Length: 361
Image (cartoon, rainbow, N blue to C red; front, side, top):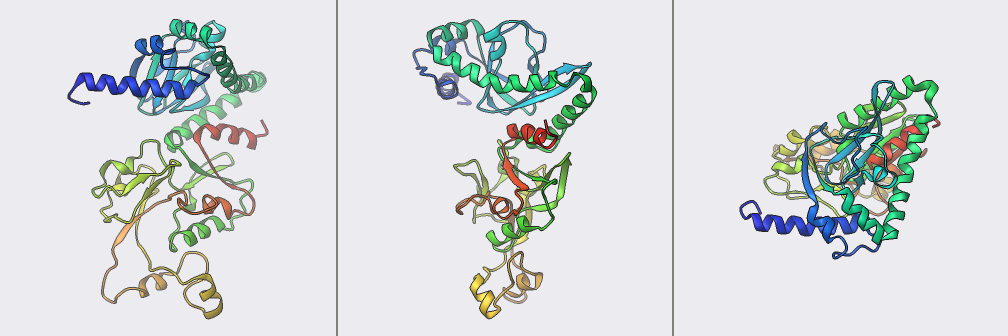
């Protein structure tokens, strides 16, 4: 693809066609979207660069192929964060369906690839596929409800502006905008029992993959130090044995071929990977309960780690990170072990609704 232009164009055309059919569905066929596909314009977008500007009279549709976007609207002279749009989504349908100027700006949160679809050709497509129009209207409804919420807060615009601006900053700086799945702890519900850390340790040979107290907090939502399972993981970029993989549910995990080079730890901008000695397997719970063999539930003591290998031999370190409890039944142990429901795992587009619920919005 890098050397033969024809091969590159063919692969891009096929992948674009499949993505459009998957995203829009509604009975579309390859023949039906042929004209739209022929005029489709791939674009690389830098962080902060706008693909849609508020006030424009354009009505093209954009598909986010890779990366993520934030939607902003100017209120009281300030840009206010409205929502987050992940890869595999589209934007621009409001002006296409209802006409009028753009009501918000859409900017790249991180480096992104988008596909620009010609608005005139897309309107012709809509006339041939009524089900497509209904899908666009349904998807538009949730975005409209957020706009209506802001309109209802006219008397407190300053507070709303500050709230949404801080959410946008939090999303981007904490890497939530790059995440596919992030662990949140609702501090209104958390009782500090540390069951989440203990459960994580019990599920991973005594080594917890999260630090509940570390990390940053927005309002009542705390993001502990735990892997975000980035859409484009930095940790994968320089792994000599290719030990880091993405699972079927999007989880990023490290297999047993890790050589402990530490490249993934250095490349991760969110400090969610650490190098540690992997302890010997703990005795089972019944052995501990009836015979006192090994430590109890939770992370084993340093004495246990150090005493179960050959004396004088330094045990090799390996990269340790959250793997979403891949291969274990019931989902992430940290969430299952929380007695109050404070620990949840969400995709970034759900973060805003969770934040608003905590404010009684």
